[in-house]
Image (cartoon, rainbow, N blue to C red):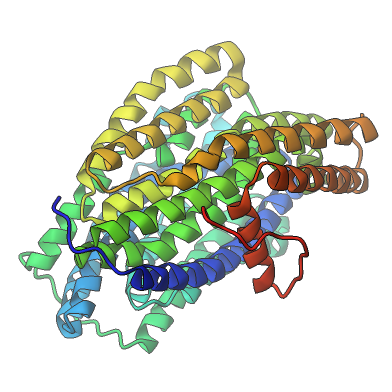
Length: 539
């Protein structure tokens, strides 16, 4: 890759400043959606516990997710951004919308065929995938699966609509869409639980998928000048390029999506394990979404624009600073999660049908999952850097090979330590995946490591010390798990100790960049935190 003329420092700061502002608001929106997700999962735990019924509910999403993955639904907004952004930069919007129409029509036909086939073959596919399920579980799982399958059409088409909004720098509506989706699941359970039992959650999910991920971006895109027509020009160069970008994502598979698919059939032999792993991992997904997903969504149009313009150095600098901030935040959150895992799970889930044994086991799996939080967050940015450069083949081939290599690890560790082994295997797998992506980006000169990474050992020392102190104090004050109020007190005491140790060590270890970022973040909320060093050479 040849070097283009370096961007001026002022230009670089402009891009980084704009990216920082958008990232901040995206993080708030995603955080709000994850809070709704927390309320959803807390309601499920309260109403249904962590038994065979919830195992069936969690597994009911698997077949629809497979169909979504075959259509590259989870990455449609990413791949289409790289196509549509070019048309916007060249002021050829009409042509861009013709390509948009072809993509939407192609996906609709593909998904309709897939939904019909999956509706017919639901029962045998689930029996093959989950042979350890009882006949009653399989019947319940099949019923909810058939309800959830049509939702994939809304998710996938909504992904393309969101790409149109992202390309125009409009991030709010796609970020808010999950709020509606999560709220609909909760309302479905509350309003229909008495009549349909746990199946009411699937009904709410279907309605929510239409109202949130599909209808909201559609209204936003229409307001931004969306023009749709029936067109199926499969030979259009831009459609062919989109298909080439998307095909590797349809064919290959990475641990980012396959992790749950691998764990479910192995955990199905033990009632409640699928549910406990689900509750633990979904709680960890809150910071993953805020630190990785929100930053990746906000940064993708910037990365794509910089790469398209040939600003390689600015691309690397923007990517490096974004990854460093994400990694630093993830390490700190991981430290807090591991230290206070039990009172956190007690406070979040220990209500109603979710008993004390469920809480202790879920807390253990949650602490293990949290150890790999930084990898889950950072790999999202690594993948988007590849996608922004127009390359989806290399990361997908690498991810598929890592997934195949990791499957024996899941099997062996689950055989020895059951659910705990699955959580450990998940950590090992995502770590390997992240390291491989970093190596490949570095080898293609798309990734650089600046001097700010010299702070990493000091940051890790801070995280271990703060987490250890918080864990000791929390356990000393509250040696036995109690109710929600006692768990809240343990969380408050542990958090105060964690924050105090982290604050003192950040100053003693000279982590000026970290202190400056805290000061900048507090300023956005209108807070005044005295004593923060304004010096931030490695921010």
